[in-house]
Length: 123
Image (cartoon, rainbow, N blue to C red):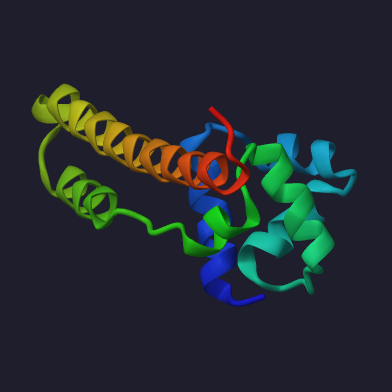
């Protein structure tokens, strides 16, 4: 699998506030083994990707096509430059960016659900 998919897995895990330990337990592997998946240091089968998607309650396609928002990286960079007096404001910016990413993920999920409903003639 490409490192982009590994980065997507890490980003989605972080958005869901899942730890590597939690993911490892759910997948029946060690935390070190899971860490290797995110870093791209371990071969990952399609079956393992399907298991990860199941834990995330997403489709494999969502993981593959997930686009991280550069706002988080920019906010983190700004946070390191700004003084502690603005810590609360910076924390608020991080949460706003996280909310935007979650809304984007929700929108993609809704679109996929509509597609399946149309495909299978469901109400």
